[in-house]
Picture (cartoon, rainbow, N blue to C red):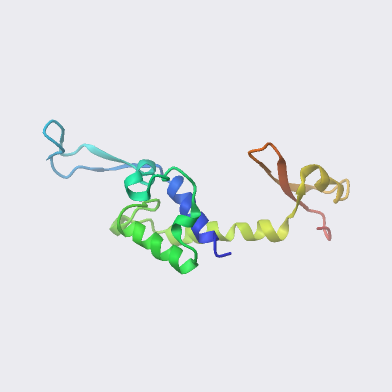
Length: 163
C-alpha cells in the first residue's frame, strides 16, 4: 500500500494529535513588535492546527486533504515528511530535543490499523452482512456513511469457524 504513508502524514498534518501547546514559558522578555511585549515567565501557546494549514507553507489548498502532496513513493513520502519536520512545517509530534519519543511507534500503529480491517472483515452493505452470519452469532460492524448518504460497512462474525 504505497499510498498509506501519504494518507497518514496528510491526516496528521490536518488533524494533529495535539492541536496546541502551551507548556513553555518565555525565558526572557522580548518585543514582538513596537506595541507588543512578551514578558518573561508568560506561557507561550503554539497553535499546531494553524501552522499545519498555513497557505504560505502548504499552498492555496492547505485546508484540503491531498495525500499526493507527500509524493508518489514511500521513499518520497518519508523524505518530504522529514523535510517538513526539519523546517517546522509539520509539528504533529513536535521536533528537536523535545520531539515525541513515541512518534515512530504511533505512526507504525496507525499504518498497521488498516490490515486487520481489510483481512478480518468482509465488505458489503450493512443489511446484507447480517444475512451471512448465523442468527445468534455476535457480529462486529464497522460502518461508514458516505457524503452521498450511503451506509457502507464491514462485518465479521465472531462465532468459531465462521467468516
